[in-house]
Image 1 (cartoon, rainbow, N blue to C red):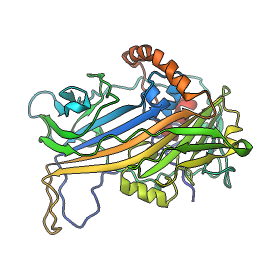
Image 2 (image 1 turned 60 degrees about the vertical axis):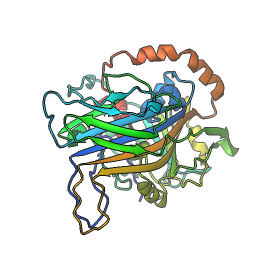
Image 3 (image 1 turned 90 degrees about the vertical axis):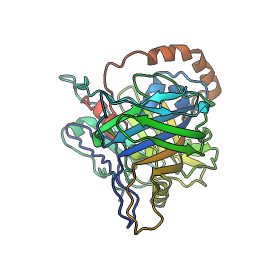
Length: 414
């Protein structure tokens, strides 16, 4: 059975649910929940993903359609600390003390966000418009039942297209550190600092996290950022598009997708998955174990695969611009104190656990202008992009995945 996977619900008639499961590795050993959980998501962005400074999701794709600002590969870090403790005194504070090679100074603050009401609201009288055409699978021609056409006006009336499945069971939702599942929480990047991770940054070395609501966390990283991945798109026979990329030794699997839009509001979305697997977890960092399962389900391409054909029908939809995206999932490192006992009969009571995940992603324009020329032009606009990034955000935007995108198209809040 094909499945369509999303990361957020779209309000109104379309209800798409994404669940976050907090689960420890499967074992017969008795283990207590840790006081603190810490995660590092380390990414290497190239092509238009680096120019947009995003991460290759739908927001980055839309951002690139509006213009970009970076001309070389860059790195990203997402740091999250969650604890079962309240601050020992005063307001919550925590810092991640970094190796000098990271290039962010001695430390970065893990800021506890303030909860504020969303400013995003539906516009009175706004009617949903446009359609979304869904394609999936590598090959010259689409498989049976394609495309699935989602008419936003019909969806708003509760009329769902046949063949559309709304369950995310095929992709495992790995445990996450969030403010919603932590008594006290802090993260970086945040509004307190606006540092960019340098292109030559290295994660190798000693790391320490200290704060007033969690035990001290210390570990040594021996795995650095992944190398950049370079995606290419070239016209194929019969109107197809051939995608190809450089093999990364650290990659555990690959996932590609293409998105385009027309001025009349119609959109097209294609994914390399052999089933309807769009957005959600595949846009995140995924553990090697989960990637192996997804390869078996033909949702993720194996690390030996370095090419994929986009069906001709995707380009023939008449989209004004088609953006290609590619993810290379990487290794994972885990730390804990005290370490898990080798003897399964001994109960494990960790004070803290840490997970470090890696990925590389790139974005490019299918059959569009030369990437070198575009990146050169983007370098001239880098200062303007930095100034724009420093301006305060006025509204909360819809999240990634089909749910968030449909919410915006249907004129409802996220």
